[in-house]
Length: 504
Image (cartoon, rainbow, N blue to C red):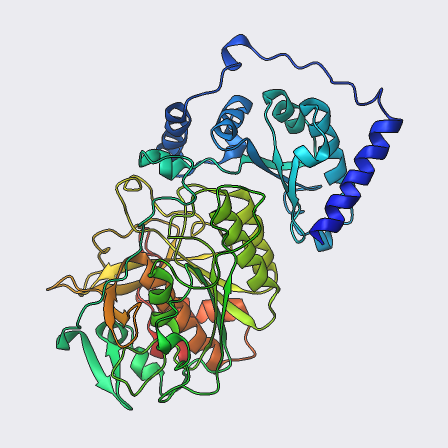
């Protein structure tokens, strides 16, 4: 499909250039002298930080042409252009004018860049109305922004987080250890309860009446899609032993869409295997089998699982990671077997291509859970992170054990939060037991990440109990089970989900 789009584009531009040279003359654009030099990365980041501090979010739509051009200059001159006849015109399959609009925008780019198509067009998305292009001139951006068909123009490889961390921009991924780790810990006996056939139920599950809910539903016939860092090839509970003990008749599928390269032209992924550890933990807490090996069980232990390795870690910083997340949402959105999507990764501000991909998945009835955010040194000033604050997603954060709802030590809160999950012990600070990266080993995992995967598992229990329900019916029932319902907290949404009430 991509090759056909590129071939058609090349043919169109060749014919157009030959027959319409007079119309292709560059319209004069005057740039103020103070705007002709690119801003530094420190200046760009300051504008972003100021916007987040003042409004809670930053969007490239609010940036000047100079700032967009400057950020692209610091990121391989790579840009993503979202186009359409309206803000909602993102789905190519429902957009009859998409090819004509794309060619019109490419004509503008070629005119101002004075380059052949193969030097400008990196890729045209097969599912979404967006293209990735190389733009080197500020005049091109100004000309494009004049078009009524532009939904957004964004620097596609400006690495805000890496710059914040003082890392080399050329690194293939963002902060290399964010959310990652291969550690294992022996579980404290007070942090689990052993149930038949010989599985460890995490202490946190009892805070949400999940074991009681299992008397009515175990998630059977529901497929959860997890977008994360993949699954460890060394953990059989999420592989060859996915059906073991009281878990049976279900499937696990693993895909990789992340390309570990600084070059946008690269097309080879690094496979489905987890090279971080985070994705393994999320898959474990959501769907690990109710096993007979003395290992932790997941919430929906009879649900099907599809995982996508979409990034190297939880901070989706840079072109290839954001492309990976986009591809994963589109693939899961297009998969009719998938009911629920869970992503415990995020970013400090919005990314247009991911917004489009989420809206595509949402338009196809998917129930999407996203982590509200877990603080690091560079996100402490941020509230609920992207994409959890989107109206199409359900934002989840983690709280401490106790009668009063209090955020975990590093969990984000705010008026975009929908649900909370208890994941930090009051006395010891221990988090939720999970299967580790390595077989027959265990670990603890915390933050809004584990809270999100837990909530996705609960949603699978509800949907399995009510297979004819829509996404909205499942979500409403979960809200009604929250300890704040019918009210909504300004920081914690509907509060802690009661899985047993939700499946009744």
